[in-house]
Image (cartoon, rainbow, N blue to C red):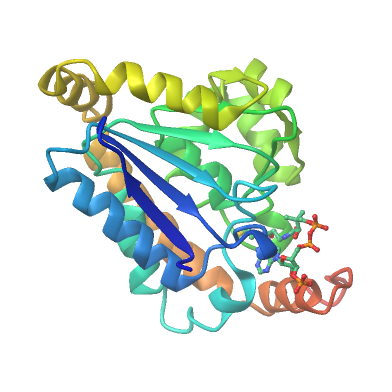
Length: 254
Ligand code: COA
């Protein structure tokens, strides 16, 4: 079974699902490539009117697969990752996310590029970049303060603390807390899919294109810093500690 499943239904809803539930849908380089392909094809396929993104099992996604990631970043961010960081913001069809359980790292920064986000009461959102000796990615240093305010963005990014669905709703990170996030996402997708596609495309263009050039250059700049951070001994210690299921020891680093 594929680790990213794309299903297009007759009513024009493309469902892209992370399918690695035993690893909390941690995203490998291969999964980035598969998801990128699905987003890129959505742009050129007129049958796709709206996209739902979700994860199978008890989590949305635990973010970058740390084992896979560390082995692919010696020369900057892997091409599959870079492709994904371009494919999602440049997607011309509305994207609706359904979140349950963990949404860690890119599991939360991906949501900043989604048009609508629904979460159930199990959802937990976390940006643990500093805990991994890393920096914000995927345009989050730009998009997060704009979406939830400078204070909340700073607290989430400086502490790496997780917030629950209710707090995420209060911050404006998500549209609604619902009993069944995927069912709510589907209901909303059906409404959008039945409306005139050209008007929906134009609306998305108007909503997202004003700052697109700035956003894409920030994504690139963050990506360069992130790739440099990945090479640091602190980051290696953080990721090795995760693999070895122990707490990291940063005491030796200034
Ligand atoms: N990369 C690689 N493997 C991961 C992973 C990740 N980001 N997140 C989870 N996994 C794996 C675990 O190693 C474990 O594998 P195992 O069963 O072979 O030991 C499995 O998925 C289940 O995870 P586990 O940690 O046992 O589940 P949990 O419910 O106790 O905790 C999380 C869930 C998401 C809180 C925890 O796994 C975690 O903190 N993951 C890392 C998140 C992260 O830092 N992401 C990167 C951001 S840049």
